[in-house]
Amino acid sequence: FPLANTFWEMQLRQRRVGNRTASPYGQRVYSHLFSSYLNYYLAQGRVYEVTRLGVGVDCFDGTSTASTADSMSTAVNSTTALDRTSELFLRLLIEFWIEGPNVAPTTKDAIARYRGVRAGVSSSQSVINPSLRDSLELARPFNQSFNSPPSQVQNGVLSLVRHLVSDKSLRELVQSVSGCVQQRQREDRRGDSTPTLINDNDADRNTPQSNNNQVGVVPWCLTPAMTATQPSLFNYIRLGLACGVIHDRSSIFHWALETWLVWLEPW
Image (cartoon, rainbow, N blue to C red):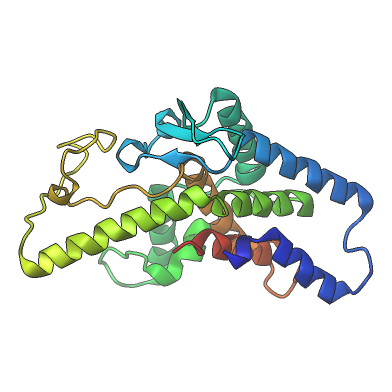
């Protein structure tokens, strides 16, 4: 994925600034250390079973197979998707960097505020519902001014997303689910399959299914780290797009936009 390729980004930055140093030495050292932490705690290259990937708060409890450090060896070790130390590392990044002091309103509260504002300027007695074009207004925080994260934090969040997206395990999961969906579509066109839709009340999403062709739910295709990061990251992006200054290239608006494009790149 080009947007998630750090080497490609460095080449582009060098072309923009010439031979000048793009950032202070201390910042480059910090970025290098953070990159080493990502590689250590959120190791890439694990092989996940699609039917055992969790979706909710238990997304770290799935199983995976990790190759040994020796690339010549074909032996594998069975291990948890992310050990508790790795989970703690990621949770701390989410808590202090991605979520931070800015809290996005819940959908219920945002819609209630939207209707309250519109009711004061509209003579209609019908219930006013927001549309897609009102998404940025719904994302604005309540009763507080937006505090833009420091540039180092914004750069760190972007580095985290690049690391998660560049994991080859994600590519394999997406390809596997894509092949499953395409096969199901072909069977539907021929009339060979009769999928049965399931919901949270009928079956557990974490329960392996004996026959995927009989289930009308698309298998989960995110790694556990991406699953845990996604909800808070979406709020981070929404707040950045809603409250950032679009005319300032260094504002969080452009960082949030680039982060969003990198997250979408596998699809």
